[in-house]
Length: 232
Image 1 (cartoon, rainbow, N blue to C red):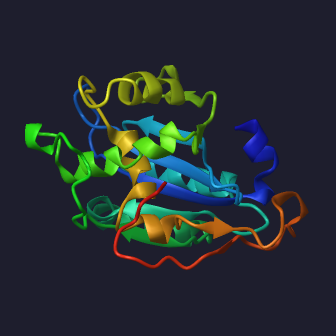
Image 2 (cartoon, helix red, strand yellow):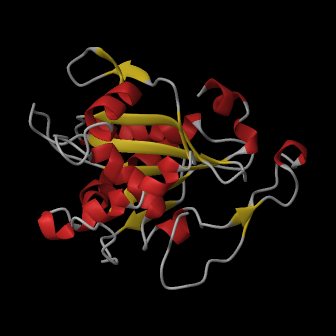
């Protein structure tokens, strides 16, 4: 995380938000995933939030992330799950207006995609499961790079390494015994047929090598074409 943050002018940043609305032991987590790109074909995840947040807390945490990961190229592009955005729009707009700090915001829907999971007949063929399954080749080919740690105070007032919790409670257990898959679900948007080509196209290149790139010049992406998004 420190390396990406210290060299953040070399990256384009995106934030994926999948909100949950209640605080209880059994409720889902709000997931916010920061994705960084520098043209080397990898998806760097320098920070995540995996916590149980009420509306004001969600908006404040998102604003904090956008400010933190803004660089000389501009502000991170935010992708927000559609149903959650519908309920959060008014507060989000009010907060941006009050702080006079606006950023690009896209709604993520639930467009059906081809079934990729061979276990679909055994109950694993849901839309969410298919999206998460599409992450497998990215992890297998070491194209998703996670931060070593991501510590913050959680909803219970305890210090928690959210990256470690994600790895132990979601990544290592999915799909057999994971009670939650909230971060996996948010992260899966980079490999989704609907949002993948828009969020982070599967083929991209820098105008110049990253170490020589002008600090004000953004990554130039190849134009995606085709019916099926295959992230490997």
